[in-house]
Length: 266
Image (tube, rainbow, N blue to C red):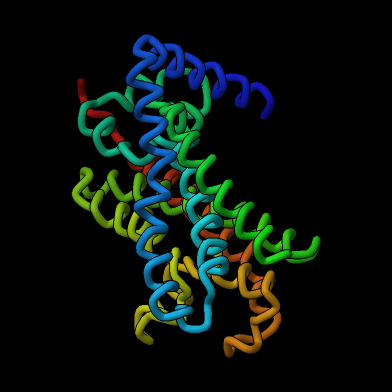
C-alpha cells in the first residue's frame, strides 16, 4: 500500500511540475476556482435573505451543506481526475500502456491529468464548512458528524466516478454525461436540503443513488434535527456504510471491466 501511495505521489508531482511551467496561468486558474464559492453561494444567500430561511434552513446551515459536499467532490476531482476522463484514454488505446506496467492500474489512472489547481476548490469548500461550523457554534460531537460527512462524500463520489469509468468498457464512453449528472449535478443538488425536492427525486437520491448520505443526513445529525425532519434517528449512522458501499461497488465494477477488456489492438 505504501509503495502504491509513493507511486501515486510521484505521478501527481510530475503533473504538478508540468503545470508549474506556466505559473501565471496556474495561479490565475486557482484564484478563479477559489472564487467559485461566490457564484455558488450567492443564490443561496439571496434566497435566505429574501425568505429568511429555506424550508427551515438558515443561511449558515445551508452553507454547511455546501461546504461539506463541495469539499468532498473537490477532493475526488483532485485525487481521481483520471477516472473522469477515462473513456478518452480507453478510446485512444492508452489503457494498454498502463496495463503493461507492473503497477496498480487504479492508481495510475487516478493520477492521470492531475490538476493541482483543484486544491483551490478543496480550500474554498473547507473554508465555507469551517465558517459555517463557527457560525453555528457546533460542539465536538457535531463536528465529528461534519468530518464523517466529508469523508463519506469522498468515498461515495469516488465510487461513482469509478462506476462511470467501468461503464465505458461496454459503451465506449457514450454514458459520460450520466456520470457528470451524478457528480457535478449531484454536488449542486446537495447544496440544498433534500427536503425541498419532490418525492420521486428525494427517493432517488436516498434509496437509488445514496447521495443524501453524503451531507444531508450527517448535517441533520450535526444539527440535532434528524427526527424533526421526519427521519429515523439512527439513519445518519448508515451514511459511512452507504458511502463505503458505493466505493466497493465502483471498485468491483471497474475490475470487472478490466477483465472484460481485450485491448485496443494498437
